[in-house]
Length: 298
Ligand code: HMG
Ligand code: MG
Image (tube, rainbow, N blue to C red):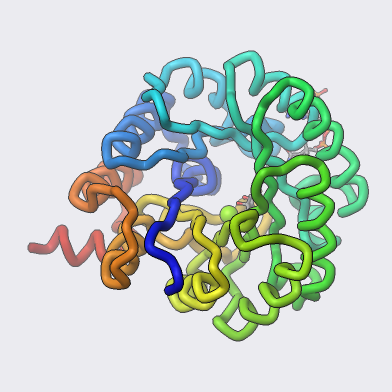
């Protein structure tokens, strides 16, 4: 890789848990967030203020945000779909919000109940307000390679949405392979296009590991100079509106991988493994992180 430092943006408490059918109590979410901060993570997406009718697991976001002990220097962003979610985020003093238009019509309808264009209009309202309030805004584009409803997605369409998000004031756009169908080749084709409208430092890579391509996709992305990567502790995750999508790239696997490249992350892998075990034990299922498994077996 062409970089010596990577920023890891942890999405476990949000993307990781949102798809779990077993309701995770607020205190377990809070404890998980504390453990992640203790392991050295500096960006921990902690909740989403979406409709509780749509995603029940995230319904206690306000309690989570009001209960966590915020460590100075750690960023606790939250996902918001509209102004209503934004105002709840503000009530609990979120300093960063994430907006998330879809890269395809089919997924936009299922995930946001509106077209891509209407989604962008609503997200612009959120971004405009956040910029006025001095709240940082992160953008996601979902289904950047493929959509569970529409099939392959064109890199040009993703570049256009990325450009829109940057012009709304997003400091960064995270490119989400929501269903994990990407390969090193399709990721390269995507990035060649998106990098015509964005600088590498304005982008983040968000891979789901459905087809086991997470790390090779990441390596392909790092070659373009991108230095922010989203991952989820223990490889938790999936999207309720993308059937079959498995977890995100696991934070433990990512840290081990970067260590091998000599890339610094300032994270404590032993503490990450403990955090991963904590949440996997609670959910009563084996970890999705191979590195966690390997280190736990010793
Ligand atoms: P809708 O039903 O069309 O919305 O949903 P509505 O405006 O008609 O409102 C319906 C009801 O929801 C109303 O309540 C609203 O007040 C309420 P009622 O009057 O019926 O009692 N409502 C809300 N309540 C709390 N917070 C809110 C909120 N908004 C409306 N913010 C909506 C439209 C966008 C709200 C819905 O579709 C939704 O919540 N979608 C979010 C789905 C979601 O969270 N998906 C997972 C996250 S995306 C993801 O994981 C991908 C990502 O990781 C990247 C990647 O992997 O690529 C980011
Ligand atoms: Mg995701």
